[in-house]
Image 1 (tube, rainbow, N blue to C red):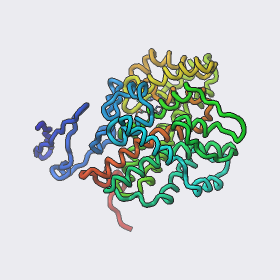
Image 2: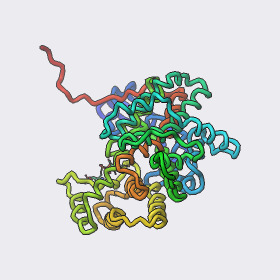
Image 3: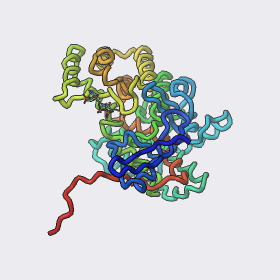
Image 4: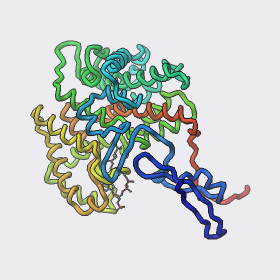
Length: 422
Ligand code: ACO
């Protein structure tokens, strides 16, 4: 077995640390005996060099711009499989057979309805509440209505727990929108497929026909697939952190929702559109690019850069194609898309962005797709939540069933006052 030898230059002591092979990507050094051998911890701000778990779900190669769910490239899944098939893949490890799909999809439809008590919670929110605030509270309440999902040893109970939360998320997200608009909280439509039902729930009125085009369903479905899983990002790490204490699974999912809200993470898609609106016209792009490059200016180009991808985000490539397909089919004439295209054109050739490997990320394109679908800005991050819930649940289950998993408890470098007395 390969190993790393560390030597303490002061004491001259050396110790070996095993290097564990990964199936794909970088191997890892097992430093669990580091403190015992040397009396030191590692310091790794943002944990960007630290593997916190072993996982079989997702693989990312940030330098190549590659993303695999259970081994399958994201581009193939987005093009050839629907989101419900991807849910099955992420939760169980395999794509469903035709028979499995029929049962799974039917179960998911039946679980869309929330308890009437969940609906009543919305009455307590002001119309002006941000949808993410309402989502967080409503999903938290799910743990009150389904409090028995604690037995991790029961496959049946955990299957039900996973399907329930993934199936209800579009309903809850649609309710946050409908509440903010003063619309009635309608029932999900059992006859419609997952992504079609979500668009229906955003658009439906008690009177009139709700029109949803195939290209809109296709885009919405791909958006969910592209957001479904992304290994140990900030929100997933938060879910695993809460999950490691054996809290209720939905309490862990809510923690993920709250972590996703921030503009450095899932909130970036909303910030991208706000920024494009602020830029206002193609003529102003140069001025804002200059601001983004100025180290004395806090302005950052939203939708650019990624902690892991140092190449084009593979999800962004798929979305760019879909956005253009949607724009052409719906005949959308969007000033924001023109501004976005100009920014992309400059950033992909400008030395500042090129030398720092700052490429457009998924959020750069998703916002303009939502805009073309007529979806309100504050709903962008809730849509990300709908897609990502399956990833959080799969990671949580993996953690709960990992015999090596421990309560998440990192260490620190203490830099406060030395010991003192009153
Ligand atoms: N605009 C301008 N400059 C940037 C940007 C940006 N969007 N992102 C990074 N930089 C610069 C930094 O100023 C820094 O420059 P320096 O080396 O001269 O100091 C360099 O690039 C490296 O930046 P870091 O912050 O160290 O990169 P990190 O990997 O830690 O950050 C992050 C990644 C947070 C995503 C960052 O790129 C960012 O803030 N982007 C905008 C927000 C965004 O789009 N977030 C969505 C992320 S994807 C997701 O959550 C789904």
